[in-house]
Length: 396
Image (cartoon, rainbow, N blue to C red):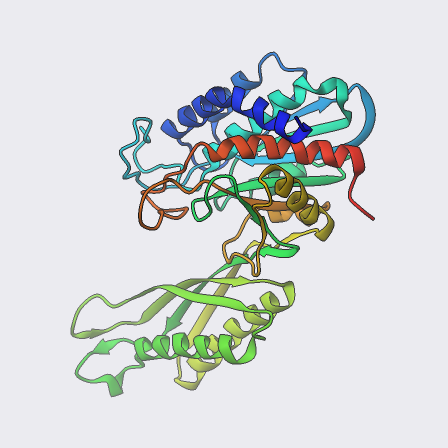
């Protein structure tokens, strides 16, 4: 039996505990940076292990450090813990008991797999040269929890960092990632187009902001396709338009909101400049004003090529070659990007597609399900990647 096979067997042995933790977290989802019940469950699962535990002050984050018998490298494994502000519409016996909150992105599985990995690595402590840091992070869903934990020193001394994200698109026993940009940046914009209101029957006596807002939307779409390189793309989506109070009244103001995704800082900056320039100039052409605000969100999640290759190699050994190098990035965003901006590392996607006919509900769906068998591979992959990193380091 190979070392990889032994790890998989060990992960299967503790799978009932990992599943139980995942289900208990799923039943009590918590949002944002303050996750007291989730933190309590995680700490209980780590109780008795030879870990140095540090509780972060600004958030419910936990940093647990396992020190091997001999000094060596230091590697970080990360799992996020927070849920999404949305209802759950599944028939699971452990479905959410909290109205308006659901683990629809698999963070319950991420947390449980990381706790399982801590248990397995603790069992192999006598074989470890170096340290493994387990970063249990809140606030990934829009609260930049990773950034808060970094500010409190979570990455101190770490040479590399790795994370897994489940995906209902791939079947259990498969893994995918890519070298370089693996997920997009995510920024948000808000515009207020200000005109002069009045009676709908006399638009010539007003300055109607509604057609101006519509023109801005169209101009932005043209800008994205004509000025942003197709080889370094960006996605701009206007998701909200609000204006008016009555059918016979031209409003004073129309507001627009949306998101911007990009795969490099160059395209991100170019698109941000274009959003502001186009909105302001189109508005000026129609004697209105556009107040544009752009909120920087998460940066591009860019894998270190050496770390991504290590994950693909280890996953390929574990999953009989079912490790895929993605041909293109995912346009969603991740605050693990803040970690990868500080130290080398990689994030990969673990298959958990449930069995059955038809397409699986994706992450962020109110009907999102996952096949818990896939978590066996996630627990074992965390362990195998950490051990490989401690043994060999990143290739030169």
